Length: 462
Ligand SMILES: Cc1cc2nc3c(=O)[nH]c(=O)nc-3n(C[C@H](O)[C@H](O)[C@H](O)COP(=O)(O)OP(=O)(O)OC[C@H]3O[C@@H](n4cnc5c(N)ncnc54)[C@H](O)[C@@H]3O)c2cc1C
Image 1: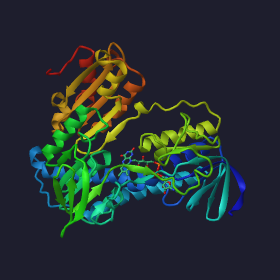
Image 2: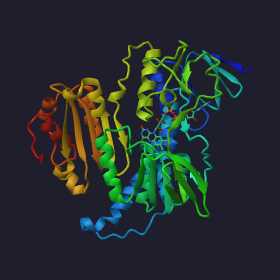
Image 3: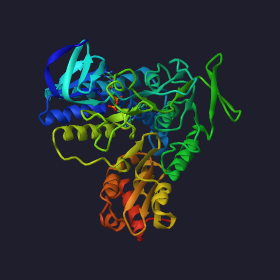
Image 4: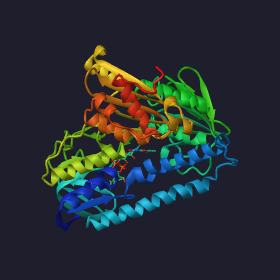
């Protein structure tokens, strides 16, 4: 039995990742007394094993590619190879700077930060290090970890997860990436830029299968050009060790050999053995279930982030944490429109989107009520300067608002900010067409796509 700490907090938060720390920072800002419990490192997956380290690796990959291609821009440079230790030092330097900043921020907001593994001990308390932390409310934010497939063991050596891949002490000569979703295609992109032979195995018919089919096809074309191989609609049957690496077998009889295999088949919630079920919290396949205000069926318990079955993205965790904090502080809050969340896959080329796909729009509104327009980056000056190919596709409800923006091309992730305003403010194509976009920018391509959709294309060849 844990000792009772004397303070009763307004809110006790279990897990200090994107969801948990955002809830803590906002709650403290609103004058609530907050305890934040974290067993590992403040910042969680995003800062230490996710968004930040992968994007640093991708940037190093971009520098490698640009060095190889320097002559095409008239610059003399020779690509000599990757110094993986220096890449890790660069990546870790980025992480440690942000980590220090975050620690300072939490301390400055007078949040009680508790290091240790916590367990929900009642609807209003969490036990950690033999101490009980009681709150009027508890927020569960224990996040997620890499998943595997039944019977597939991740040994951390030849069969690895993204956690291992981020610490790999070498560039593999060849790699199999099991799973063509966000995490899979990002690592495939990095390793290819670093010089590896890469094969992606994806059970669904396309890479980045949650994106509009047009974006997936453009990504596949670009990856093919980069020499990244993939097996689509290919179900994984098993893996065996060879003398030098691994051999993966597919149900269609094909086999792929490589030095290592990355298992990137998704992430599962961290909820087992943490007292959630005992406290009466409703769950489904390990995910904690919540209503649109992120409250569980137990009124004193809320949950946010990868632990609940919403989009597994850091900025979704931030938004959910903020929403819960504001609700607990008595503010009026608005449920999150998850279709309105910007999504970026940061491989080369980038895939960015907001809103719904053409297929989903047709399902909702009917085939004859959906209009689309495309703008090819070949007609965009800045993209030409960067030598990137790609496209922006818009999905509109006939005579109505833009309900989907889908972009592929180098740096297109940076354009998703305007795209999300267009979707979330339910803009009409004619309204966006009225706005002037700076020339020459890649952002201009978004303006041009809306000019096309408004019936007055400028640089479109179609
Ligand atoms: C390789 C990779 C790349 C990614 N790239 C992006 C990206 O580019 N953009 C993006 O938006 N998202 C990205 N994500 C997803 C993003 O990292 C997650 O959506 C986000 O971290 C979820 O935040 P969270 O707070 O729910 O969970 P987490 O960040 O997982 O945090 C949960 C925290 O709870 C702690 N915890 C768990 N159990 C306990 C316990 N019993 N006691 C105390 N503490 C506990 C954990 O130690 C952890 O720190 C990526 C993920 C991965 C793996």
